[in-house]
Image 1 (cartoon, rainbow, N blue to C red):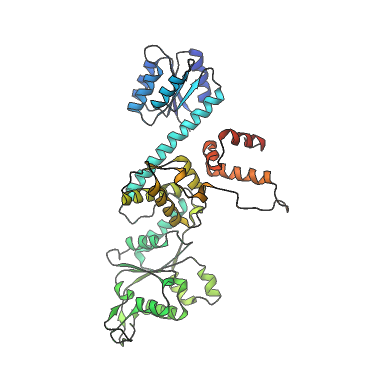
Image 2 (cartoon, rainbow, N blue to C red):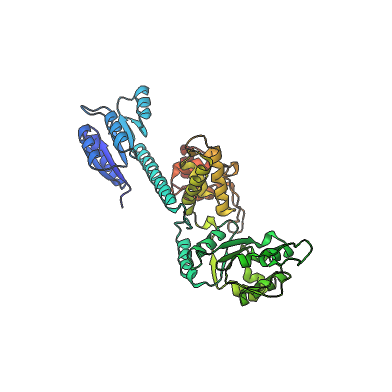
Amino acid sequence: MSKGRVLIVDDEKVAVRNLEHVMKKEGYDVVATQSGGNALAHLEKQAFDVVLTDLRMEKVDGMQVLQRCRDTCPDTEVVLITGYATLESAVEAMKNGAYYYIAKPFRLDEVRKVVAEAMEKVRLRRENRSLREQVEDFQGKVRIITQDAGIQRLLDLARQVAPTDCNVLITGESGTGKELFAQYLHHHSRRQNGPFLAINCGAFNEELLANELFGHVRGAFTGANADKKGLLVAADGGTLFLDEITEMSPAMQVKLLRAIQENELLPLGATAPIKVDIRFVAATNRDVQEMAKRGEFRQDLWFRLNVVNLHIPALSKRREDIPLLAYHFLAKSAARMGKPVTEIAADAMGILKAYDFPGNVRELENIVERGVAIATGNAIETAHLPDDLRELSIRTFRKKEGRLPSLDEQERDYIQWVLQEAGGNQTLAAQILGIDRVSLWRKLKRYQME
């Protein structure tokens, strides 16, 4: 599979041949020519990711090739090569949008590195555009934003069980999006035109929760001057989402169990039960099965709610969703704040992808919202991320073969981990580590990780 398309332009036959050989060996699709005019013709016919062009050529020079790329192929990165390097020409080239400026004689390793980094920039730009397009497609819909295979399987299961009306228990860490999954189930069920109501069972004491769920009749207690319809009645014909179900007291669990079994409830102070038709979806971040074994949660209620279990993995287990979710929250926050922020810089995205997110999707949303709020341009930069994200450090210390690791071993393991999280991109890894590329190269050489 090709790593990208490269156009090489140089009026020196030997230079063209050498560069063509090196670029093909690197795995790129290569078109080479000794004429600037031919280069313009190639640019009219097909798109290239990177153009390597000599600066001084007869009739059509490198600056004209650069200008054509800027006018017709703005995604293409242009690297200028010249044997007549001056500060003025370098400044002019960069002002006109060149990616890099290489002076002859050059080292082939230098060209390889520059082209690889230009390719990475092109790839990231396309990825960002694709993410924005996907995010736009999600707007206004009850859909789960993901490209993770595990979440896709969960969504398939959710779509299968949604029309069956069976009760569902959603488990997972706080901030993973359990309520969104509950809304997704409701949206794909036969109840989608009915109400979707939610309550956090951990936010009320027993009396208040009973009143919120079951309601009361006038005169049921001092101050009850009118009937109050509880959520169980209000949710009739729809879905009731019970978040943090494991925080419910034993007495409340008994009342809820009866409502689920009998499809009816008795408001406080009432003498006649009320029939209801409700689909129950419950959620918790705790191990309900273990709680049931210890007698901390009614086993019969667990059986009633856990007809189907959807377990949502932590964000750290599905890192490929981080960019897509980040752009979703960026679009959402920018629209709400009225700010023209449309991008997340590559180094900032690298840091986000390497972070563990103990607060899961909710934490990512807060970080992106903060970034949009303090961004001064059209992109969230590294400086707009919280300090603790930018100051990534080694936080785990594990014994190796029964002994504590040396500082060198710990550093080597950390560098290897960051490189993996950065997808092997050494420039990005160096930015995350807070060192320059040369320093990273020395460390890789020292630890024989090249």
